[in-house]
Image 1: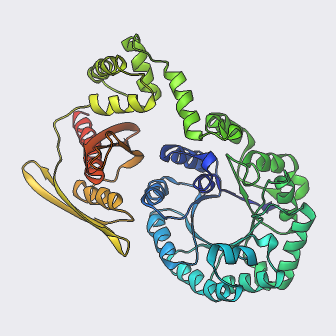
Image 2: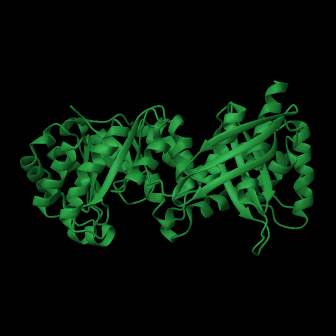
Length: 470
């Protein structure tokens, strides 16, 4: 019985597809649910901005079962960023993703086949020197010249690739054709007998699951799926197929159909807007707003229920303060999710600060690694923290953690403009999870980094005060 690995590309594709505009928190929730389902690999996008770095760094220590894979290209700087974000993962993987068809190499890389072939061994070997598991992903493999595929895959395996993926980017393959391609590659690349083969089957022709079956029969042992979206076979369809026909096909996987069905029902609201081309986040906001069902006449019990639905457990005093602030705000405007989050952050758990911001210095630019020095005051003593990060805010948060000496789980992070113009005031909202409870903090400043640090400290001070009481 062949053990088939299931990889999920939902989070990676959400960063590329505007119709799957998952928020930071929603991506974290998807990752947690996938890990609980015993998904073998969870794929993340390239770390091109601070948000992706924060996302991977936040998700990495939470993964108990899944391999966490981060995409990179031919640029070694991308590999460095991927590894910096992945370093705390229990099971990390770097995916070197390279176009292998002539049209894609010209369009994406601006290179000819010969140059791409020259670069691949070096970048794969570099990634292998950092990370024990390296995937080599052939973008648009199904439209690539077979001889070139054989050459480039052989070079990648020779340089240390531990997994090879064939991607039907254009969605042009029929089941029999994909099987033939795998057979021909296995005949031309003896090393593929020792290296696991993965496939990404597009669902453009509504044949993704059928393609996946024929690929498995041809020798593939890892299938890319999508919990949400149509960029790959639906996770539900693949798990159902293995459950129904696994015995006759000689295959099994770790995922169980009832748990997958339950997770899909739990996350169904995230997928609600896809068919209409609407933002998934907007759909979630709308649904949550309906569940809150708050207007200016809502009594305190209704507001408390809304607070609990957002994940907060507040004391009676804090609930009273939130209700008072809700009444004030609701007289002027309709209270939605964002307004309620801000009310909770502003009104609840207002404590005497254990840590206060004295000053901070940020060094950042497009040719240096951002660093942050943050000075905090505690009990009359000034404490300094110095750290680097993939962005100035990430570096600042890490510097604060160095002073506090505790790593908190970042549940959400938002920056919004409160006023307009060149000197606009920004409001930062940070939500941290500690011992199963959610704490929010906010900060306001004309400097978004300053606002973010203040919001982070605001949440930490609430955690410290709550811990002392316990």
